[in-house]
Image (tube, rainbow, N blue to C red; front, top):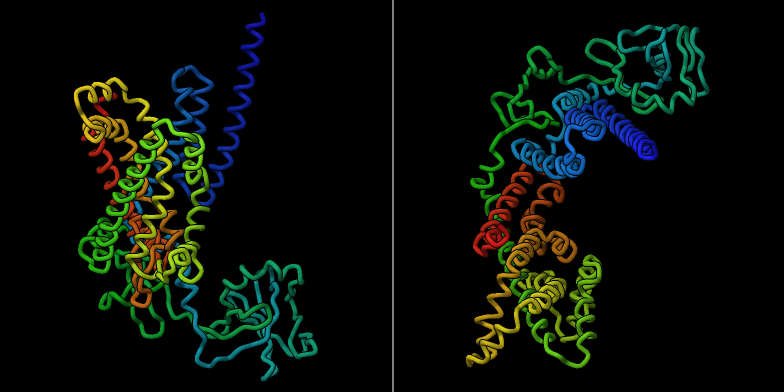
Length: 512
């Protein structure tokens, strides 16, 4: 009986928890659908269905444990990867960020220019027979009229009420907006072209003034073209996310929209010298930086581990001190080191009596980056090297000593090969981490120095990830499509190097 009660209670709790999660997911799915994020909405709906089938039925017992991890993997790993792959094939940059529908709306809004006459009027916002309307006062000619998006209605001077400035504030069938209504009227009224005469209309300049304007472009929906109403030229979809003149590809209307260009971002990396040149330099420095970081931090960490592996007085205190750089937040350490390398007031120049411009000279900036990363990284390798040394059987070392090997030979022939076999995965992981060590470069040097006057994006200490960040977000022209393509190249490089290193170290065979 007790077992049945507990079972029913557990089932009830399970139904309540799944129901609450489903309600939250349903709300989020509806919100995503309303914002036209259909893929996100579909994923949330499928997630809700998967949770219900998994926990409210007996489809699969193991799936009850795996489904949270599977869903999170899809949402935060596979999803972003697929999105990056997709965007790498798009013309997705400054000027081409919105959808085509939004681009058409913005082009129409921007294709409004003041009429040659330059006439402006005082006006009052309100409603005329239920429509958005303006009561216009032509004070110079003592004429008044009501204008809507469809018509212009003249009003006799004796039918209006004027304020102290001679501006009409009431008219027959015209209901002026209250102060409370004016606060929310900006969006609805600013998008209306109020009729004036012929091709001219009145566009608002605030809530109490308007200027006679004209539409310079007309959108022809059935042909998907824009026609210039002034000179008759026609702009067509160029297939790259812009409306352009057929005879002049550079004459485009802005903004454009995200449009597929397939492999053009990848070919640009290979063929465009403005992209290829900096990218090659950055790639070479990235490899050098990652290799030097791994070699220097491993060498120093191993050296200290060997030194403190012997019984010496105060060994615990020394070990605690060596771990301190690893225990401190890396962001804080990098910022402190940045101040220490300051040319005028930094502790480094003061200590050695020098005036080196560490972050203004490319070579000194690179040295500073390596030194700071050495400080941040050696405690990690000290810790893992100390543990690995303890794992090496002492019998091997004693047998080698009995056979006449000196300490140097023992280290070179026995200790180091065994350490490398044990630590190979960690060395490869460290290389991959430093290949993408964005925080260090961004906080310490910002990727510089670089010649900004020449329009350089890549600095002397930029690595691939920081260079990609600048292409995507760090300049006036943000090229998210090109940045996505470079990101995928980085992913392939790091994955290939890591898999090759693991294969050569035979670690996978060991675990198999």
